[in-house]
Structures are given as structure tokens and as C-alpha cells.
Length: 286
Image 1 (cartoon, rainbow, N blue to C red):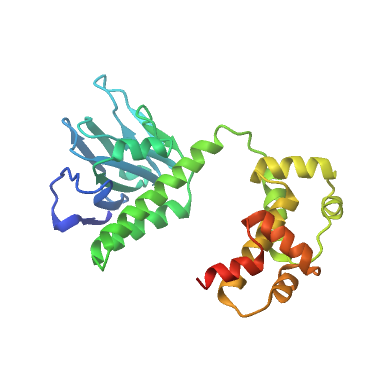
Image 2 (cartoon, rainbow, N blue to C red):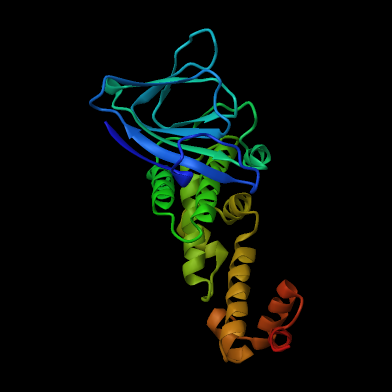
């Protein structure tokens, strides 16, 4: 069996801590392949919250007093809340690999809700991903090393996990279309790589075998903005950065981000930012 874990202040005792909104108390991983089984039984639960991620194999959970064995396969996360009875078993024959984190804080329930993890959610089907294991491994590393600001880093990593869960839960309410997702990601990448050149939306759509109306409609649904608005936003954002960090004049900056006409560039910039490029640079000097 492989085990790697870390505990805040090297204490195995569960605790409440309301000094901050979110506090990671412990985290770790088990990989069962030699021992016949590894049971956990906490009839009174714990004082803190817990998330377990089944990365490989499967685990057996007993969520009620009826003794029903709920088999949770790889790719699922299980959420336990304070004082909830906990009973689960890993078996060596299943080659189970599990990552876990215990956390507390003054605002945990509301934080979980804000990321779509409602009070009645117990098992979340996330799918297997190296990204989830990376987050857990990084938390273990941070809690073992205890470098500067490690508590804050632990809270940020845990929030990153929450964000991954939230994005997944949000996607469950949308019709997944592999072709559509791929095409929109390709368009975004193309616009980011070529924003400072002359991009014809009709020609781009035709090059991908799409009608321009279909492309614009689905791009807007995917990004909440039209293709041209997306390109303009990239141009203006990069122009803003150049105004702040370089000595290029307004005409030069306009050329760099894709505008040959300095007057048109100034008009577009003012529409987006409320001031012209020259006015913006003047404001920076005050």
C-alpha cells in the first residue's frame, strides 16, 4: 500500500477554525494494492469537511444506516460535511487509488454553494483527469513543505478544485457537442494568434465549412460575444498594455494591434475604454 499525507501543525486531530473563510487541515492519498482492505468508520463523523477523489479502481461507501453498499468508481468525488457519519472501504483487489482533503473555515458552506456544490450533493461524477490529481498532489506538497504563505496557497489550490467542480457541474446542464466545442476553441485560438491582422469572419467560417450566421450564433453562445467583438477586445486590451508599458506613440500602437488608421483606432479605443489612447496615457502620468 502506498500512502502520502500531510497535516496542519502535524496534528491528526480534526478541528474547527473560523479565523479564515477557508482552511485546509489535512490532505493525502492512498493506493491500495497489497493490503486486502482499508476500512474507515467514523460513526459521529468529523468536525470538518472532506472531499475524496477516486482516481483509480473503486470504493465502497455506506451513506446511511441501512448498510447499503454504494460502489463509487474512478472519476467520482465524494463530499462529507461536519458530523456526518462516515463509513467506506477500499479493497486491494480493486487497486483503489484515492486522494482526500479535509478543510474547515468560517464560510465553507456558502463557498461550496457558490461553486455549485449544494448541500444535498454527495457524489459528483467528474471523470478521471490528471489535473485533479495534480491539485491534490500540490496540496500535499505545500502542507509537507510549509513554505512562506503555504496556508494561503492551500486555500487557493482548494478553490481551484472547487472551480473545476463548478465548471463540470455547469457543463452538465448544457448539451455537450464535441464538434462544436472543438470548432469554437480553434476559432478562439486563431483569433488570438492573428488578432493584429485583417480577419474576415465570412472567409474564416467558409474555411471551416460553416455558414457565417451559424458560426457567429454559436461563437456568441460559446463566448458571450460576437467574433468581431472578441477580436476588438483583444486588440484594445493589448493596446492598453502597450500604452502603459512602452513609449510607442498612438499611431505605432494602433499599427501593432492591427489598425492602420490612427483615427479609427482612437475611436474604437475610446468606445471600449471611455477615453482616447492619448487621454488614457495622460491619465497614467497623473
